[in-house]
Length: 193
Image (cartoon, rainbow, N blue to C red):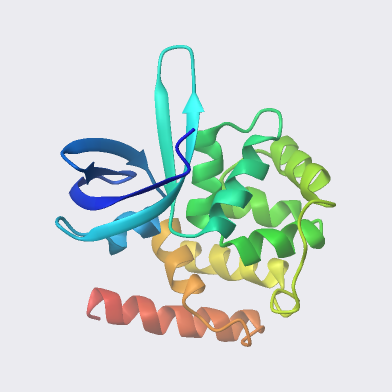
């Protein structure tokens, strides 16, 4: 089993990196945030999970152990494969996911990650006792976060841009309308409006 990988980024794609380790290039599937932060020639070290399938060996990489642990919990749920788990981590931070599970907020999971209602319920049910909610997560209101996302999408922003903007807003701002206002500021700066 490959536990970590360290090397230089040779190439990046939307959902993967080619990491050169002593002349051997490993294709590592990573969260979108990791590819956005990556650039060719940059040194990188990732915690990894090797998914063994009948016709492939897929390597998944994460910048920290917390995301790897959460990924492993997600793929341990029947019906959630590595690609789906990575998709969930693309749109929900570990803190958001822990809080959604603690509050049994399945609507947040379905709205934010695009998974179905049954899988969202299964995630909440199976992770409820496995995830520890920290005091830093307590201030987050999943319903407000989901409502803010929905509002931004209804204003014409893509789900990805809306999610990225909401991730950057302080968790101390709990009011939905205030979160939307802050997100709109970030989105207008990004788009040069």
